[in-house]
Image 1: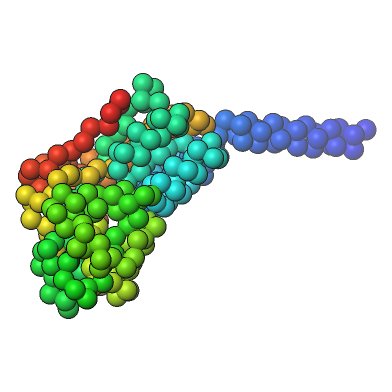
Image 2 (image 1 turned 90 degrees about the vertical axis):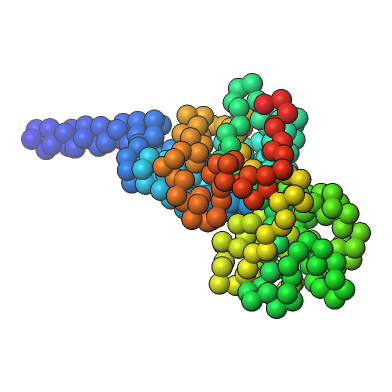
Length: 286
């Protein structure tokens, strides 16, 4: 009889453990170090180092795991359209948010995109600037090897092409372009490795690796447009509350220091100091 009671007690404890575990699994156990909750973020490589660092801090503070998919904005948009999964889309420029809205991936009436940081086009050269490049016009010199991101799929590539066209330099400089990179990270890497003499990219490429590069600021009057990074929640987000929490965290003053550490401009005023006449395009429909 005692044995029967003993086994009944063990069975009861075991059943309670299973029920408790199921509740934790279904509702999401959330502490400073453990969580069953997670969000999936599709983010342009224009701010890859920032996302990785801030995501780690966010996970520790909230217990919500952040799965980062980082790449070219166009490629990420295609992935979102095909997979129909993911909680947040943060492309490298607002043009891709508009495209995402047109495809039903984002609904601006449900969630207005949140601006996170600003970017200014610049010329990034090898450390020491061995080819003595000092201006946008210098990129047309015969024999130089120039790289830009692919204008068809990477936002900074589109900005680079528009910049050259606006200043009447596309025809001459394009003759020197030997690489059309697939992402911001790849565009920066081809300078760090010495594969090209210079790239037209975001100013932050220098701050990503100052030991292997230098920045040549473009004359402010020649920059037609300032870029910015904005994020929005997708229409198929599984955990909308967690997604909003993460976007708010990315845009909070609490992490301004991290954006600035990697050279990003958290405010428009800071970006305008390098391109005072440049426009900042609004997201149409947002």
